[in-house]
Amino acid sequence: MKIIQAFKIYWPDNGGGIAKVMESIADAFADCRQEIIVCQNDRYKKSVDDMYKGIPVHRCRQLFTCVSTPVSIEFLRKIKQDTTNSDLLIYHFPYPMADLAVLLGIYSGRLVVWWHCGFEKYKKLAPFYRLLVRHTLKKADRILVSSKGNLNHSALLLKYKSKCSVIPFCVSEECRKRGLEYAAKQHSKKDKITILFIGRLVWYKGCDVLLQAFAQMQKPAQAKACRLVLVGSGPLEKELKRLAASLELQNVRFAGMVSEEEKIKWLERCDFLVLPSVSKAEAFAVVQIEAMAFGKPVVNTRLPSGVPYVSRDGITGKTVSPGSICELAAAMQELAENDSLRKQYGENARKMVQKKYTQQVMAEKYQKLFAQLLAETK
Image 1: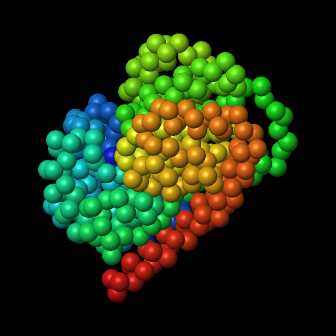
Image 2: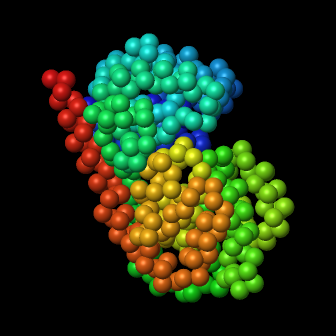
Image 3: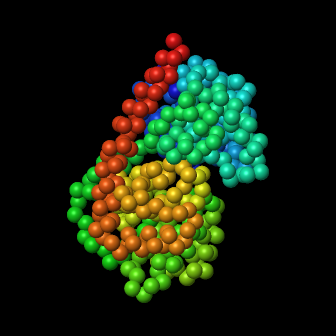
């Protein structure tokens, strides 16, 4: 079996959560022929073929970037050329150049669309793109989503419900093992509670709400000493630092982009994770299950997506209304002050990861689904 995955960017560039999913698929089918087709992250870079963790990656030259979309004629040419003998083309949505390749009919093999999130950021352009997306979904042989929440809250996807399959994301084997090792150790009590955020500093992550909520929870004189650490970088970094300064926040650290090893260390050090996202552009958030693997509770938001289906309110953490500074502050304060509640949620979180979000569980679901899909062609 030959599998080709297509998206706009991939490791070691800033690929984010989608790149992690692509990598997990590559790991699950290590015995198969594979290729990943993406774009360079800079228009000044030429097309290049390289390897990432043993998988061939073709990084196509882009002409320019428009509304977060690398425009690349080379990407279209490569899709046409390299899918000729492929069995599966997995398109990680959204990337309009891939939709254009589907519209032009220049791909071969069965088409699997991995629906990662909607496209509500550019509201004026959405009606035009929606026409292209409908054509892609119509042509797709299977549509994958990470949670029932993403399916149930998408009018577009519900029209193609019979094609949709739910395959939750997974934590890496390294993260799972490190989480178990961490759980087996004795940990001394800390004087200061560490609240952790991990993610790109972009509009839909809600980091401005997080900073304001942190400022609010620090007001009572009796409040337990806390520090807030934001791991990640992005276009809003300077703006968020200015906001933190204007709020006169003393115990906030912007850690910037870090290695996977350093990220794991922050997961070990923290007391709980906060995911304050304000838009369903946040469809799942792999970082939730990464924190849960280390037995850390999660504070997330009640988005019409898969987010609140991952860490469950009152079971593995707290879920609050998106954009609510007061609710977010109250939830963080409750977890900061209640050691036993953090421990209870954390234990539930670790057990849930071991049951639902491992590489093995995910690989078995992919293998079963792809075998069924390819059998339909015979």
